[in-house]
Length: 240
Image (cartoon, rainbow, N blue to C red):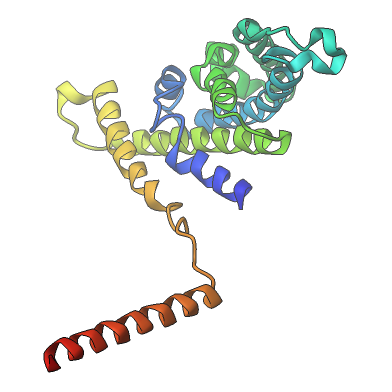
């Protein structure tokens, strides 16, 4: 259930675009066509799925306070958390270069359509934000870190895919001249963010602890006895 909750929460409730507005530059620039949006969204999913678990390993076994204890007791006092930004960005840049090489080799048309925004994934706020959120939320296991990376990428992918499909249809709509271009795009993004806020209550059920049946039966018997005693006292007072 923990994996399922984290998966749906990262996609709908804590969506990178609609909840934290991370990665807006690529979101706005590459969402003019669905084809390019799908390509960039798939690249973001791949990069997040690789970098978040890798950065989790770096954080747990190298960076945070006491992480070097596996090297020996004398290293347990070291705290390398001040290197988090540098190490995370280095990991992200390496993975982005790998993605760029693969896309250029096997999909040159997509590589040309994405242009400068493919290497800019290395400085995409959503990519770095995924690793930093993983660190701040203190995700416990590598599996949950991988789950969080994939689900966050899927959420970003759905956001850019939805706005790309809408922007393709808007071309044939009678949009007022002052709102054409980025104006109407920002308005639609805000409305979509409000819509995604409605998913906030989808995982709020089942928090109350259920009282065991035996305990509830005992509580009911005690209440009945108390009621009987109160009734007897009232009758006694009346007779007196």
